[in-house]
Length: 425
Length: 109
Image (cartoon, rainbow over all chains, first blue to last red):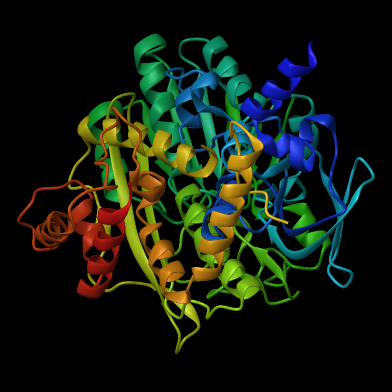
């Protein structure tokens, strides 16, 4: 390549690469004003919005091991065979090129909250002024005997973090005999994405109804009853999958037998399936636990809700599914995106010496497919109540769909593509 | 060090934009940041700074006249404009907040 072309290429491809080095060359800087760990709904949004809210004046490093972002929302449609992985996958290039976020594909092995450094698996150490930690959830395999091994052997999958397992679970369902049983075990709340398991059961039932109509879907729920959008799901199940889908509450899975694909419960009779999808209890991502930030029941991270700063460590802001939630705050991707904006504004205000917003707001809109073409939603608006130091739903706001509809399926996909752009583009 | 501008044709423009970025950074106030972050609660569905993806179902809010946005939010809130979800969301915002959001999007290009 001629020198002139090289220069032009650098300018076209992003002056940032020329100015500050580039993640694709493997470089992590020695320090950054803001370091974001985890490039999901919370972390990616935080990285972008610190840049936007600071008028691009604060340098941001985002550390994320995966090359591409794969969305959990909409991933049930891959499990149900109606969407491809490529349709739920997005690039981190927009954050690099349009917003000047330095994206480093590596894992964080340790955080020192005293020295204010993060250490990467690749060996580098980055000093931060502000750390944003959005580590997602960890599946507590130890809570269900035999599950860890069954998972490692590929016999009993979770697919609760979108990725290769998402497609692998669909392949298991696709290979199941007509007349087989797909059983989905749900842990006690709180867990990531309250309506997610019911959505999955619904779209799998839709697939089976079409291709293997003698099959059954069994929902084995540790909770007493459906934890989200209950009446809407139950109506869809009765109308669309009568005799095919069965819901059983108060079924807390305690063990699996990978050889016979049997799941055992604390009280109820065991269940044998052809495809077994067991979701164990969940907690904050391992890095948060290891750093001592999971100070609520040793599972979730307590935060000061006005800023999402950890109650355990100064200048560490924790977002998304890993936090101890405020009243009626779901562990959802949309909510993590909302957390990120409140945290980003607080971080920018603090680093610029501006007053921190006394009344931040959050929204949540969560769409669930009850079939390949029909959707229901739950929505809420939350305001920070200074006197109680927590977020509360605004009285009179929010609600669920009047009925399932194809119109909301159009909105659901538009929601997905817009929120992916809001995080990454 | 500022690392704001990208894809600029030559160094003079880089310098000019750096100066511009400094200017806006200095003029940033707590008030403008708060309004911007309030408006960002719409962006999850309606796009960053109200720039929803073209061809998708959600309305583009960027550049929408302020009075129109205020009247639509009120119509949602009062049940006068049919909606799937916006009547539930609109009830979460006060008149003052709707006013501030509408002014922000009206001035967004």
